[in-house]
Image: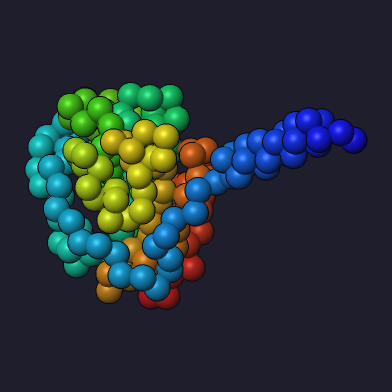
Length: 185
């Protein structure tokens, strides 16, 4: 093979491998056993504003903190709906849920109460500038002003118990419910 063809082949293989790596699910830097960063953030539950405080929520039991890119976007609508449908299952495990986003934060009041999304069943917190997401290594690589889709189950001790990071919204609830069911009581 001549040099130009060899170079094209090498570049083609590199591009293919780069594409495969880009398509793979993201891997969060925070792992089970790590301390979850504490945070307070403006939030909404059923349209009503309040300040969400992770430390206060952990006093009542384990918390799923799930980061999502932006309110009123297709994948995030689906994910919020799936968490909404599973709220009673999480409560049965003694676990509360909060969604956190850096995208479309001005729409969170409506997003939190709309039946097709959160349905008023769990709060959503605003993270302008993705500052909280950055602490959780949950910043969307292609759009760093938005959160990535990463879910954490945090024990009352403040330690991370489970992590699920994948832009596909379909398995976050299942993964967090399985981890919640496995928690020692």
